[in-house]
Length: 218
Image 1 (tube, rainbow, N blue to C red):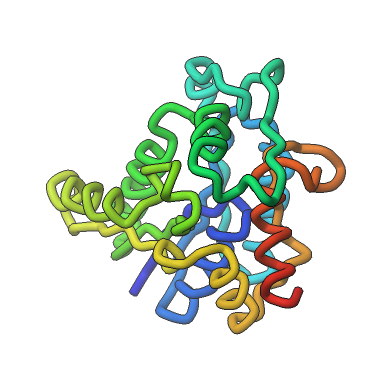
Image 2: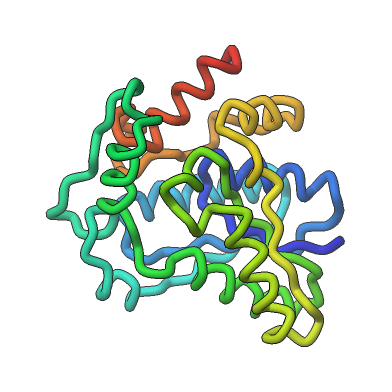
């Protein structure tokens, strides 16, 4: 099995990559730069992880996505929500947080770009990092989305490239535990919406990571 990895440098994509290495060969890791606040840190994390696993890494710049995105993940003037740990599982607050950081068709675009590389390089699959927790408010993290886009790729790729996510059916705690079994170098990941010197510890991504790490005994 030969894979292209969509690697943001965060928890889910890193653990999915580590599992893909157990399943077969990784041909290339792709990181997308679309003007997100954490672009510099995500690229650095993904590059360090690719080097750690001795994998090829490439950054794809998508300036147009920056131009058409008005939410706070890209728009530096917007406010990134800072939910409490207690509110992470509140459907209304989670939906509001998701809306504040939504990027138009982001995962659909990323997957189709990666599928171009997969077909050209003779790879069987694109590996991405989804999770069950965020699928509740980000439909493009869901198993249903994976199934739908795979039906599309069956028509748009000559070699029938498929998308898989080894973490899509797991919550964050389960993903951390899987990463522990796989020996993931946690010190290299970046799971923050901001691009500061250190992870902020207050955005939703940081809160979910911290909660999962604590629950998994990290």
